[in-house]
Image (cartoon, rainbow, N blue to C red; front, side, top):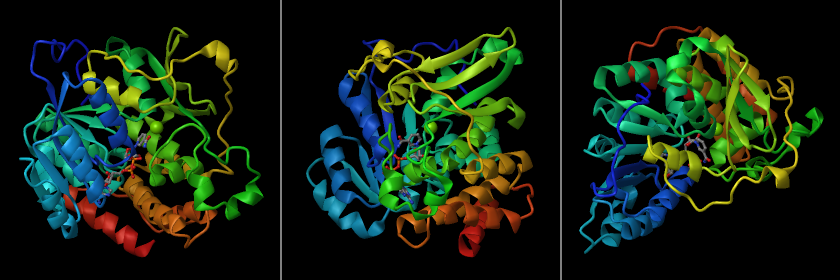
Length: 392
Ligand code: NAD
Ligand code: MG
């Protein structure tokens, strides 16, 4: 459920700071979130932070931003975390359950920035607590979008998109003119291999794949951008967030990543949101919603950029986009299968075990062996996810 547009400003400067819980605090989106918090110490108070492995970074962040609670997912690091926070008054905890508790504890907004379906349980805990959730963790909506959106309604939770394209749409989608929306277009940078000949794709290395031309991101989403699976996941994400049928969702390649997405209206107007490619902007937009807060980042200078380019995506060279579109059309369990096989394949590619083009082959093979069905509940999601991971 998206927030109502006419909702009151969250705080005037005289009110208490907005409490922010950050799931996946040590990652790339986590880093962008701390940049926003650091720019507005009076507006935001860090409530809780979580991470999976990087305990040293978690300790540093906790010491700097003073949350009430810091949680490390891998329990093997618990002693280090406790020792690192000794004398600070910050509570230390460990394990997946503790991350879920951190997500459900009282707060004003939860930044969901864990990578992969691994974030689903925590996001659902935040949803069930009725929280406002700034959602970066797109794989949760891809794998369990119907359940999540239904749970948002049931528990009165609110999702505010953080993915830059969805933040753009959120900013220009007029709630009172929903009937007049003809389609939305997600822009795609095309990734580092946009112009690489098809025959060279099989030999690209993980290092080349994670070197994104415009955005600095975690390894998994960087590979997803290189295969264009990221745009496929985003089509499915948009379908759930904005309740739009697949035939109203379009993709255009725009290598400069300046226009972040567009909404086409029945009168011929096309509304877009523009900005420099920096995740601090959509993070600030989500955290401060419905207000805007200042950020000291480079400003958009269209005259200096000179030209913006657009082209249709090439689904022959980037079959992941076609596979995601197919999964979206089939609905039911198929997007979960697409996501699980993709997560497995991307991890193997990053580990040097398979080639780049084998990512799409792994996903296609998993999808061809699966017959889409309705997923009954969260435990069924985890069961199918783990089955696909074992068989992919
Ligand atoms: P990242 O790899 O940089 O960080 C991931 C975070 O999740 C880390 O803090 C890590 O400790 C935590 N984590 C990993 N596995 C976990 C597990 N099993 N349990 C609990 N925590 C775990 O990832 P990122 O690039 O920041 O991306 C985070 C999410 O945001 C992804 O879903 C991605 O698609 C989405 N997103 C990222 C960007 C970006 O610019 N990085 C932009 C849009 C959307
Ligand atoms: Mg995006």
